[in-house]
Image (cartoon, rainbow, N blue to C red; front, top):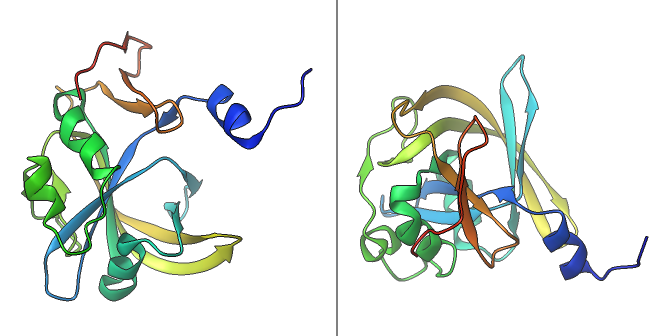
Length: 176
């Protein structure tokens, strides 16, 4: 075994599912952020968490709306999904600039991103600090997906996107 620095170790542990987390700001405008740090945490009740840097606009929006939606973007929206992971939504309409379309969620005010393979609507249950990040715990109140769109995105430590489906088929030639 060789010692590694943070970037080497996290890159070597890749790929990670690449999510878009949607939220709504104080004016009702939707926002989306690319996220790689997340996890399911419970089946009964169904819970998941996302880890967000303390200064992120998305964290501010989630604290306001008390809900968020986790979208697993399909490969057809890779370009827009990547854009959402590289720009802040503070002061811009990131979803419009990314060319992403939204639709209303069933049970929360944060929207669903059209073209997502799987979607988890969440109500905030709690949050806690973990060093330079805040972990937001959400209870999943609705789940949906596009069974005809199984290829969703994975990130190789925020430097490259690939897509993979539940059968292990991989596409590493995405344009974004």
